[in-house]
Image (cartoon, rainbow, N blue to C red; front, side, top):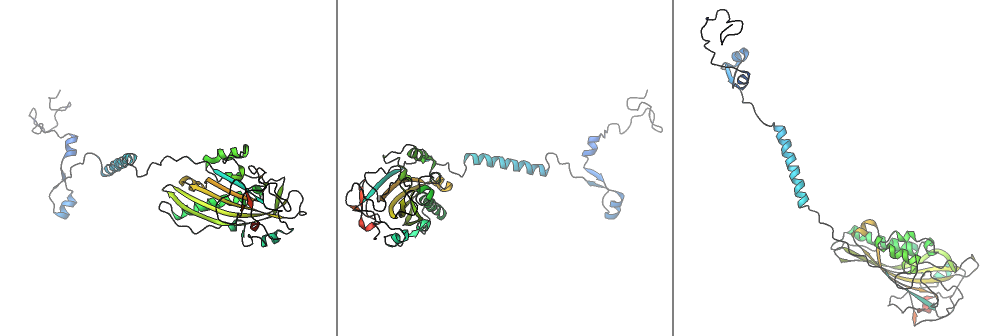
Length: 356
């Protein structure tokens, strides 16, 4: 066997036998070689650059690479931002919504002082009445020039006015509504918190100032009267104002004139005019504006010719051409005037009737 420093097959030829290897104390293992800071230049490099035989190698970089470090930094920043936004986000928590007020309604019948004037031609009646210059249908409900308020933009004010106009058109000009049939077209424009009151009004009409269908919309008793002309005459105003930082209010004041004849007799009967003045107060919060819905909080109606003895809660039962009221009321009321309200029943002023 070889000595402790010799390979198993013995010392190589030419080596001094039995002598100590003069380099035995130096160990050049693989890790030592890789870590060496000196590297020999190639022969070509030494010839070209006259450089020294060796060059110093850059020390190996230990730890994360530059790309990995950047990635870790980005993840840390994103995580920190998420925590910050969760604790101090820039969006205000929406305030609790105030309860929606129930609709307060008043319907005042106006009784004629004599016979209701009539004529076969509706156009003649319109021309000889105060409604001669009124516009027809939705054209009589124009949107006013709108301006932004302290807390609402131009578009939000226009949205409030447009929703109010849509409600007026659907509830007082739609023939399907006027003849006592359709109500859904009006219902879908109401704030959801008012739907229970609306539904109860039609399921169980009551003259309590809260649950009269004629406070929500205009509809005639189909067993008594029908439209002689679908082109209803309209005139009135719309006004928008901010009540507080979260509420817009729109006030609508319009007079509608309908040409009616007795139901079921076609064109045989004479036509008479029915006049209705209606003041509505709408309220809008930001949810209503976004959803194209309205809170109807006040409905004030004066309408005639009606008989004070008739119940106008569920349907309007107009007096037609040649008919007279069974009972009168207080002093005459002109629905074309812009004065104050009458009592629960009034008299239709002669000046409000067409001259035939």
